[in-house]
Image (cartoon, rainbow, N blue to C red; front, top):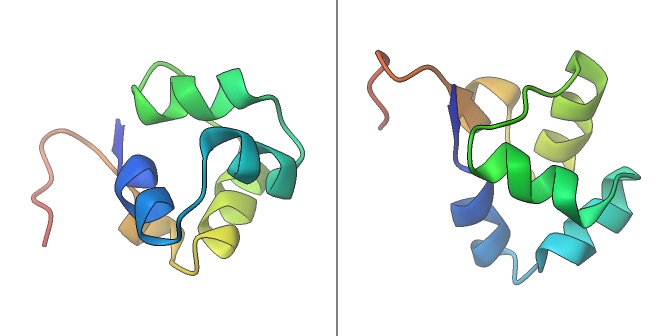
Length: 68
């Protein structure tokens, strides 16, 4: 699974630490999600998407899916 967390986080001028604090996790969790090494719970995925003003579908995708 891949994510657009890093891209959207940059658009909102948020550091990994800023985003982590907004969603109640450690900075390392955001780092691992950005690298595709951590699959978040549905609640965390929802919280991250909400913090980045997007949808879960737009934020997370599998390697075989095309992005727009």
